[in-house]
Length: 285
Length: 285
Image (cartoon, rainbow over all chains, first blue to last red; front, side, top):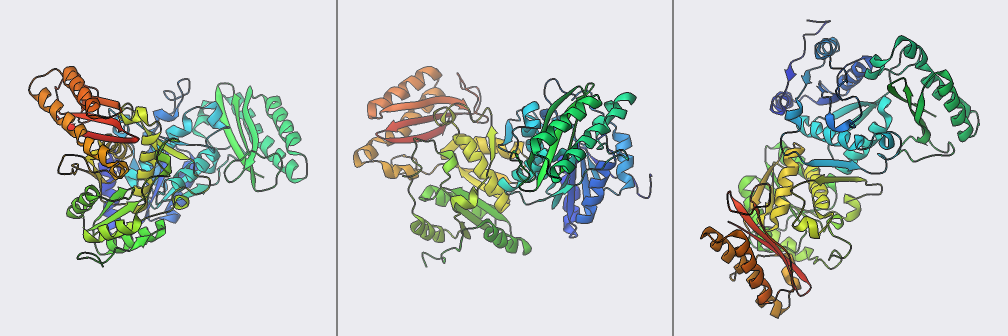
């Protein structure tokens, strides 16, 4: 027992999740899904809390999905902390942990891929080829496996959220997508499982990413031309100690069309390298 | 009124289909989907009859899907005969016709595509690039829109059936796929909406396709080497008056791996050109 709730049951197989969901459905309960890759932090727990406001039961999936990692990315190193995750899920009242194996998700002969053009291109889609196809495919599987009424995703992965909104609309999947605002440390750093990779020195530098976005958003709102505000943000990020910027761009908040001026709801999105760690963040303008 | 049933209602919008299906679900009825491109013949009606043995209600969709036609194919010319189709559907007791517009299926901004590797490659996948991606995407949409318990497809489009079985398994869609044997004319010609393109002379030649498959299957079963039996079938098809053979191959019945001998359940598959019409057929070995 942890916190005020018992540990949620753990399902490893699709058939187990479906049996549990079918029981809930029989008594008229609604169901939310919160897909994660584990290494849970308060951002994930906020997703679960939000999901439980929108539905009676929340299934949390933990699956470090190999098909969304590139060959030189951190699939093998990605933190796996299931026992700690389970205790955290209990503390927020999650109803079920679905933690399938790779073989359960991708059995021998698996051959299907989903691509979402447009919104998947550029930004992380440019630096991580195939990433969003991996995400779209695994999320489609999870949605089909669990058949939830709602699914919650963080705005931290803003492009992913836009890709998934497009995917669900295009394929007519009967599920509502909830976008949940990013949870931040006191110093502004967006919570991320990858923050665990940062050294103490890097951790001290990391909040500069969010500060640069906030300054650029304020400058744009104050009338500074977009290109100048983005240039200042780039200089600030590199000046603070980041090694490189993968991208720093202003995009339409809905659909991610590139913007050269703030003529509609917009979002600044950034990916930058701090030592060997790649951090992403984004902010509304 | 036609035959013993009233004309089924016609839904043009996804929301209408869903409302109708939701009513059925409320009273515990099971639902089948029969996706078609219209120009219905007895092969389609057999699909509906089979669907109504497997489920309480059968939704038939008619949608000539532009994304599964190549730029030089017969999308514009494809027969559209909705009034006659509706009367035929009434005669077999179909519960609902879903006939959406292209704009309802692919609204502005539509960006998603599904590909199924392996089983989509070769055969019609080689001569019709993009065809099976179009099929996989539209069938996924129809399955998500209708959420049926079962969906029925003809063995006439054998590779399509294999692609869809793989798709549904890979994406964990909760639907059973029913494969329904090909319906043939008295002279053996497989029923096809494209038979309407044939001149009287071509119609007289067309059954040679099925005869060549049957002779090859009998020869292989009798011990003739696969390559020799296929060569004889090619000669027979071209000798009968077909202009060209797109492919004529022996494949594994499950998964369509190429075979050089009949060491497991197998299927001979053919596509050939008769005048300007492309006919396909297949037969179990």
